[in-house]
Image (cartoon, rainbow, N blue to C red; front, side, top):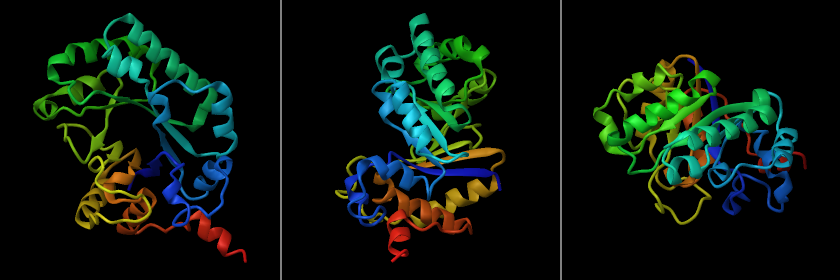
Length: 257
């Protein structure tokens, strides 16, 4: 099996106190506690604005060597400019450089999450944007969400430019090897994020088979809406893969007494 990094999308959900974190864990300790169990995280906050260098330094200090941060490229590039023009390339390059310079080996992937209506009709814009970044060899993953891409050859065209495609439970783009798996679920499918309520064991069996067949490095990131409680989904996926199950940080603390 390939080298797999497991992580959720975000770490600071109030509903995780109790089932995952110990009750009363201060906000400033959450990432450090999270990193005792998982070795990767996907940052959604970067979608809204680039983080400050002081914030990146804090994240670095709170996580061990070998931990990986993947980050969405800001929406200014993807949703407002829709990748068009030299300014989009520059802003993406500046963001990637910021993350790379401050996280170093802890940088996982930079996720170019495109709008749901960004379809094959804008392929030229995507490829022109990719050409503008190709020389920098940033670790870029593109998430395509419009169903029309399922009949395209965009995977190979992006691979020629050094970009990977994300795999999701929503849109399957042909020809894309499994390198970055996002299990998303449906918006507002659960009210609380404290337990698995939408049990998807058959799907997890499928993804476990895909992961066993994959090669190279693969990142797996799960959202709460996939089953109701992203940490438990990752534990279940590890179980399907025959991997050891870590102990949630709240239970680690309980075992000390």
